[in-house]
Length: 119
Image 1 (cartoon, rainbow, N blue to C red):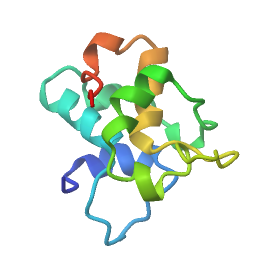
Image 2 (image 1 turned 135 degrees about the horizontal axis):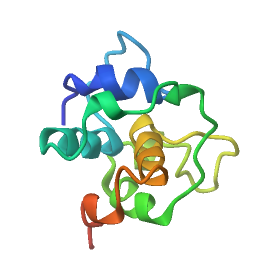
Image 3 (image 1 turned 90 degrees about the horizontal axis):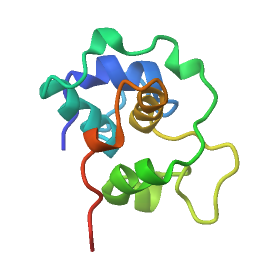
């Protein structure tokens, strides 16, 4: 999936891995989940927390690990957060971080997330 305008309201503010002008065209699964929730009208970008990039790394959440990380294109080779063995102190992608914050603030619930892939 190719990045769209969500780069301005997710990646730039919440992702420790984002670099302006980076040639990377593929989007992480977390950003795609948030983009879908925005397009469906379930989330409004004006309600996103500000200063998200400065928050400490989110710990693992089994619900997000399954719904977001399970089919993320970066998981196999580029994700230190989900690496085995784990890379200490590695933050999740910006989409994962933002989803975790929205769930913690009760702006989203487990039912809003896509079903975890089975396979």
